[in-house]
Image 1 (tube, rainbow, N blue to C red):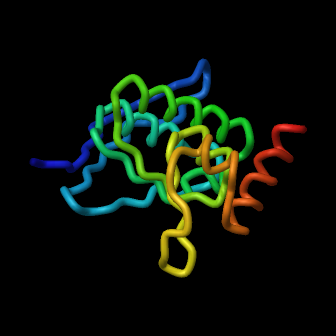
Image 2: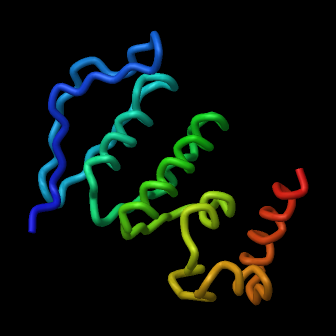
Length: 146
C-alpha cells in the first residue's frame, strides 16, 4: 500500500485573489513535508487540497496553533466535514480543547508518558478525574461562555 502524496500544477483562486500558482510537489511514502510561510501565502489552501485527495488516515500535530481566528475556524470546519464525509481516521495532537472536541469524539490524556484518562469526550468532560482534564474542561467552558 502506497501512502505518498502528490500535487501537480495546482492553481487556486478565491474571487480575485490567487492563493496558489502552479504549485507542484510530492511526498514519498513514509516521508514528511512541512509547509511554512507567512499568513495568507497558501498553506491552509494546500492542506485543504491535500485533504481533498481522499486520504484514509490523517495525523495532525498542533496544526492550528499559528492561524488567525477566521482561518482557524474555516479550517476546523473543513477538516471536520471532510473527515465525516470520507470516514478519515484522524489522530490529533493538541493542547486546545476546542480543536480536540470539534474534530474528535474520543480522547486520550497522556501525562509523563502514561495514559491518565481515555474515552469519549462527553464522559471525560462530565467527570474529569485528573487535574489536567479539569483545566481542559474549565478552558472549554470559559470559551463557551464567551
